[in-house]
Amino acid sequence: MIVLFQRSLGPYRVSLFNSMSDALDGDFTLVLTRRDRTPNRRWTVPWSEVRCRVVVLPGHRLDIGRGTLELSRGVGATLDDLRPQAIVLGGWDVHACWSALRWARRRGVPLIGWVESSQITGRHRGAISSTIRRRFLRACSAAIVPGAASEAFVRRMAPGLPCHRAPNSVEALDLRAIGQPPRHGAALFIGELSERKGTDLVLAAAPEILRLFPRLIVAGDGPLRSDVIALASRLRGLEYVGFVEGPTKTRLFEQSAVILIPSRRDPWPLVACEALVGLRPIVVGQGVGSLPDLQEMAGEAVSPLASATPRALVDAVMRVRGRTVPSGLRTAFRPEEVAAAIAAAISAASPGGPGA
Image: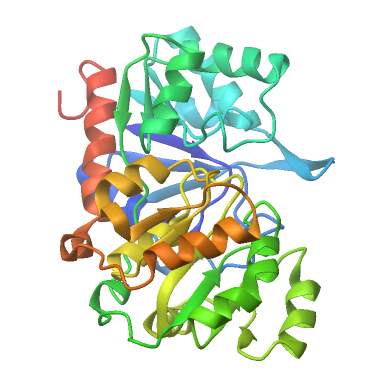
């Protein structure tokens, strides 16, 4: 049995965890600290599509600053019942992960850290935070990382810790089937409306972007929602469509010629994977941790911002306009392939485990 701890279940992870259960012949359990989505997310979790075993821990939440701390109960009892051969920990800042860490160390069960962040993608990188991260990672036998930046971060925290790469995944059967970008398509920003995601840069650059594209579509929700609505009311060509998911989201990709991802801090944005499997070129902020990996995969169809400024965003858009995404990326980021990579990483870190 392999047990993986996460705070909550994002809809984009469902296909991955189902595939992991398949790859491990059903010997897989996902342990969550909450069943509902986190408060700053509006997505819908398709529970009817979840095929893997799921355990939701009881507990309560404490509001701390801009976030919440999940205090979970029953970690030890759950693990005593499951008797895992290895445990994957999905967050150094998740209380249940530390409880699982203590349980595993007492019993000699291998731990694998799942680390998506890098040096540039988080807010807290001081001495205290680094000490906590080092302690967490040095308790692990290995780490699963999505790409080069995360691997470099792990090696900085825990030199010599084996790292296994498994990028983000998207099922996205609808996006894999859409046509080439329309000749007069829109520029599309889709995501949280916040400075972290660079929405303010999109708004500041909107008049210039609309000189390059007939439409600029903004989709999502967040702190800058009122700013987006206000500008859309007076700037011809700027359209705000609110939060979207499912078929509505697919239709926006069909109408787009380029996807804007000017994030200041963003480990591995899902929208980048969705754009590339849909053959849409992307503009990417320097705060995107997956930038080196995306450039390696898609070449000039990935255009990085030189700095977090509206002018740099416009320049990056001009460079990527009309670029073609390699058609081979239609099959990239498949959940079953990422699940197989994670299963192999677990096997390598846990002698005698599945696949050993």
